Length: 324
Image (tube, rainbow, N blue to C red; front, side):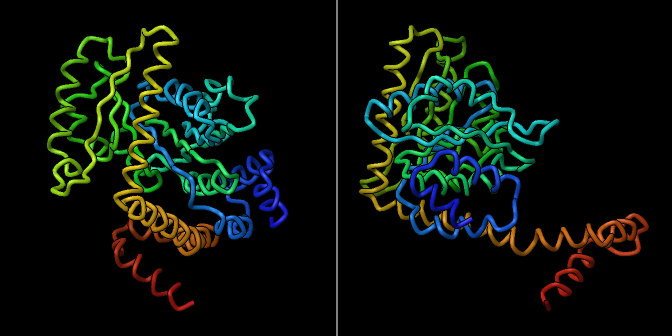
């Protein structure tokens, strides 16, 4: 594993891809490689792109890669796809859309599966970001698969969060009430040539006006921008629109640095990583043992027979393992 981490630090893409696969598959001893990499991480700008399925996130990501490459940035992309019911891995739809960058050595695109994560991001995504950082990628883009409006895990990993909305897809009043709308640093109304775009823009504008980020009384508060991108634009015009988005992303990053809010977001990211590591180190082995020795099924039988409640069982299990 140490040899694998050394190859990643040397910029070996194959080694990075293999390590991310091992992280997804929870291969034993992968922690050894991550320990070697961790001290080299923490310098990349992590950009999250989220929104409902079909919002055009992959097309935006593909063009955003091109815009950032024009600025000579090295790019890492983690495209989170739905989990394949056959292989258990990512379906790879997003990766296929970004094939035009496959010959660019400064761009590394890797697909990851949701693996049933309720928040939309598996533990491997947070670790995959660290691998991208260890590779020396200046910008790491995490594109979520868009499993729903509660998909807010991205805020624990990204420094800049872009929420993509589309007119006519239910991204109106109902969505505005949801958590997804509260995590945006930048809104993008994609396919803004569709009917309902003006209504959606006004509704998002109202949300922005009520946002805590904008109600900050200090002079250095961030005003959440709302960018409109039309789906029918000619390629050059579309690229120009996405270039404006890339400029706004950089503007947000500079705001985070100058206001010292980047430190807050890095702290939140570190806390999320620690929570995931604790979960994997403490809780998962307990679950594995309970399933392997048959105790889990016995406890379920007890619950079905109303012999005991789940809270008592949980306390008994906790007391048993906390003594170890």
